[in-house]
Image 1 (tube, rainbow, N blue to C red):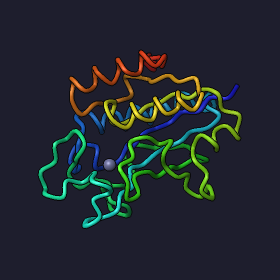
Image 2 (cartoon, protein in one colour; image 1 turned 30 degrees about the horizontal axis):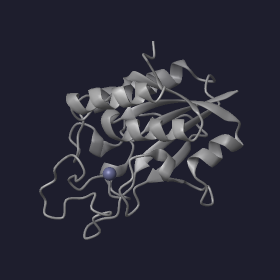
Image 3 (tube, rainbow, N blue to C red; image 1 turned 30 degrees about the vertical axis):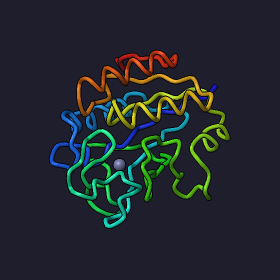
Length: 196
Ligand SMILES: [Zn+2]
């Protein structure tokens, strides 16, 4: 039985000073780095996902508010445009050698790492790559609890993996949607535990 750690969207634009900053994002980046160091060798695979959008005028299928007035529910300010500093991993995040990188949201509205593309994976999706490496369990951390962590964990569950979210290694856009997301995850049978 192999276990994967999935680090969701710890990118500059989702941390303090970014285009779509989550309060506590940089602290989560630092905490994940310490956690990865502490648990070195415990995970058979480490995966890191990134939101990786096209620049305007491509709205990424309506994901970017074309009128500049995002509702922060289904439309968002421009963020994580591929190749920009905002789309890079936060500098406080250190990933181990051999990390599997996934990009998602390429001209699309993707919240889940499982709907993205494994970098250098010849078009394989994440579920296929993990299964090929014998992974049956995944643990999910990162940003943001109420959107991409939620969607990635639910998709992992739907793909048949045993899923746990390490809640203290996540941060949310807003408290009400975070509560709703954690409820959705619990109802789906996903474990919600602290990393310590
Ligand atoms: Zn996005």
